Length: 485
Image 1 (cartoon, one colour):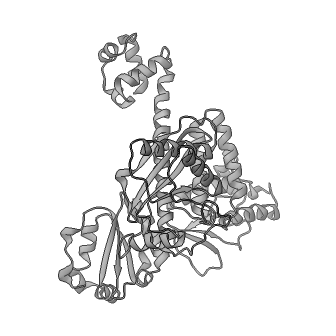
Image 2: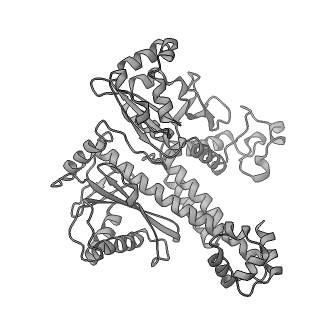
Image 3: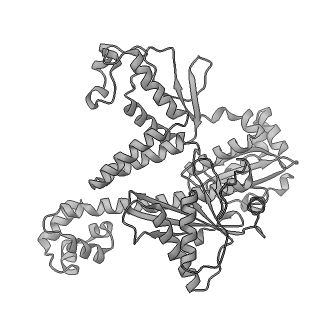
């Protein structure tokens, strides 16, 4: 690439990930930036190159082509950068990675009572390391859960004793099995550690089943904040240690010919008559049937088509039945497309295996939808299920078709989770009205209908509240505002 071919004004000053390729089209470097224009421009500033070390000068001289992908936040850029580095293993990321200090988990078997610890560097110290993990917040939350769940010590002393116990906060909340005072034998403690290490190796079935059970108990008792916390724990367990290692954010994958190769590869893998230019994907999000929602995301030419994203509140299913929720979603969406005589997509993907695929097919048949390709992407081993075929299609993990489907699935999951979280937070916030004597369900509905949200209600004066909501005087209006703060 000639330096004159680089025009900074063409690059938006937004967060994102950039990819450099050499003259053979090989990815040689992947980077992230809070400001793509500023960051990419810095590589071609003569003053910087004069001060640069040999590795940076070699990188810049090797660049023949480049492209970038815009994301919404720096966290999304971090996740996307991590995935691309993992997929392409760029030469210069390996040479210049001393600033890529993602978190690891460390276990030192030489300690009398080994435990799980966070680390930044992998050292030749005889310890066992797991990672790196780019999503640090998810890892920290998951580590905290694992230490408490298995009763492992969280203290810094390699050989904790009675003095350590006196300073320990875990003794108050009973999250530690207390090896420091002999409450468990070294053999019993090692058994706990082995079970925790099994989770780190991907054996999460027993733990996630227990979390789901507790989540159900909390939801049944209408303790939605605790249920939501357990849901986050469950999602993080699957994200950090599950076989899919699925990311929450949007892992859209830049390509030399954006999306084209992936779309063509997918059409070939599925045996379609033509490449699926317009693809839509569906996902479900709920806490055991509570606040159930579904999402629809659209890709066009292998890239997100956000103008055609949709989300749905589930209306007819009131228990935890993802299949029924998927069926309702497709009946509503495709029923509307047929009624309005709008164009159908080239391919439909549902997040799940045979069960979700069957629910989707039944829904389309029920409303008389013309035949169109529908697939299910199973979560465990990234298997692609097709109607009428017992054995799934399994693509190489580097196949661009699979990476595009993963990006579609992850985006559908992110979009559903975001909508569900917003509804959950809104319900938690609105529940503050229940604390006020004299405010029942009808008056709560009247207040929200009159002001739209608690945020707008807080801005109103007592006189305005009394005027706009029948039956509420200024005295009760003052109590409302005092409660809401």
